[in-house]
Image 1 (cartoon, rainbow, N blue to C red):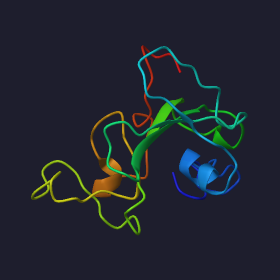
Image 2: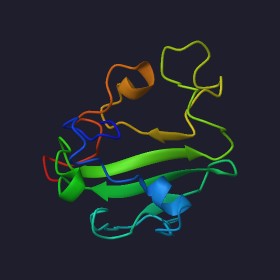
Image 3: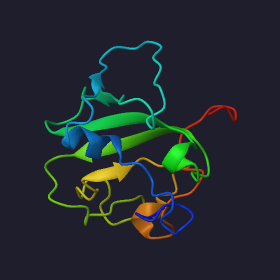
Image 4: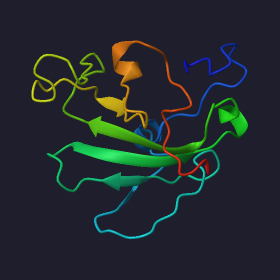
Length: 143
C-alpha cells in the first residue's frame, strides 16, 4: 500500500500505524511483559496497541495492532495482527535489512519502523512490493 491506499486512487488511504498514532499522542500502547491470552480491538475504531520491550535494547521494541478491512482500511487484502519492529535509535527508514544480505542481521541494517511480514519474504525491504495480504498475522483464516 501507499499513502494513497491499496486501491491507488486516494479514496481510502490506509490508517496510520500504531507507531505514528503513539508519536502523535493518539494512543498509549499497553506494555505486555508476561505470557498470557490477550485481545485487541480493531485499530480503526479503538486506540489500542501492545508494546513489547522485554529482551530488546533501549529504544527498540515491538508494537502490535489489530488491523481489519473496514473504514479507510477496507481495501486491506487481509485483516489480522500487524507487528511493527521499532528502533528509535535509527534516524530514518533507509537501512533495509534482510536474510541473504552481507552480514545480516549483525550488520545492524533494519528500518526505524519496520513491518514484520508474516510471510517472512521481506518484500518491503527488497522493494518487491508495497505490501500484500500475506504480511499480516492471522490464524487458520480467521482474522
